[in-house]
Image (cartoon, rainbow, N blue to C red; front, top):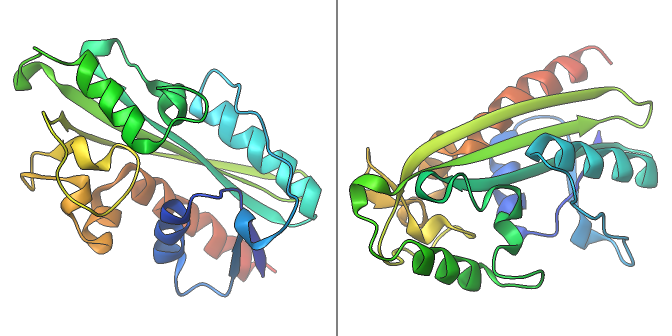
Length: 199
């Protein structure tokens, strides 16, 4: 079965492939195609954005589509950046620019008050309109500086207390075990597995 993954983010696609490995599916990211329209992520929640993308691309391609919307919520910033995580420092901001802005806003905030959580919503939509939504979350703290070369987004400043490392210092296998996306994807994998056996 061919499945569209509604992302151009190579890091995200690598994580999704890692967790869904072993199923009888072929995953195609948006970068595998040319002249693909973008979907404006203007929803007020991760679920709204994920479903909007999955619905659009499932109709566009006529194939089962998986879309994720995820972000970082920082306690000291009243849940920001939230749904604006990918564009926190501006619409075309890089991951590094987003991290820099966040660290600046947390200047002077002690480690005990730097609690944060990643949230992920995975939406799966078939061309005939059937939908499934799964969620995952991961708690940690925002560090004072970047550490680690793996991962993407806010991974280099998100510290996992149980490891004493940032998300960007973990191997892909370690990250997928504890991350918000890994948790949401494992739930989605069960739905997909059931769907594949019912064909």
